[in-house]
Image (cartoon, rainbow, N blue to C red; front, side):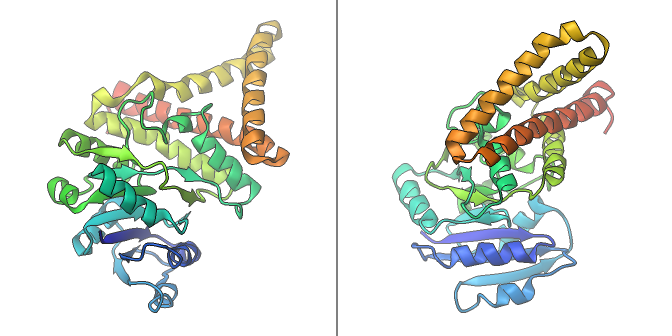
Length: 323
């Protein structure tokens, strides 16, 4: 099987250098790489060109349209039997393509997703963010499972593959951002294609490098869930309301601590137990007290940021019916 690896890029030359370097160590070598500069002001042409002797790599420049339509552009230029999408802030383990090729030959998936993990070189904050995004105590816990509380498994575009047949049948992404990967996955499901999780197709996903950037990203994800609802109302599940309910509970607890402290005791106790669960679980996972403490902060940021974004667009687009 010949793979086309597709990487949209926007003002992140350092990231593409690290990603391409990781691809030079793949044990399975039947692949090409397409790097698409999506209207960047900081281009990576020289960096990509430096890998010409190490990878079958092609570099494209186009006007800024967002990651969804940029991936469509790449699909139209890809030569592979199977297209693999990575975010530019990923590092790819050497056996990734070997594992994907083996699994696809055995299970005949039309589309797949893979998990993400923290690389040993990540900073403590990046490891904490990675933990939060994959933790069973946050909504991240439903993202890397074959069966989850959110219903069908939906591959996410930081680590996602589709067959050429899927591209030809779907025409690719119809949204360029704000939940475009979930909308795409739902349409793939609706056409009867077989989608699955490849457990061994792990990437090291850097995500954001500080909590402020992380908050902005997750707030965007909360808004994206409402955008998906506008296309597929039936996909909005009870689990998607959990961050909003958690955020309301946090606000209520803060008010009770100011206005009626005795009533806040039980709220404070609940939050303390929740924080301790995250702390000790992260400690066991990461073997670091520092990362464990930061994981508590990351988890609370993830839940409240998602909750606020979700409530913002729920009120605006569903209650007020504004576009």
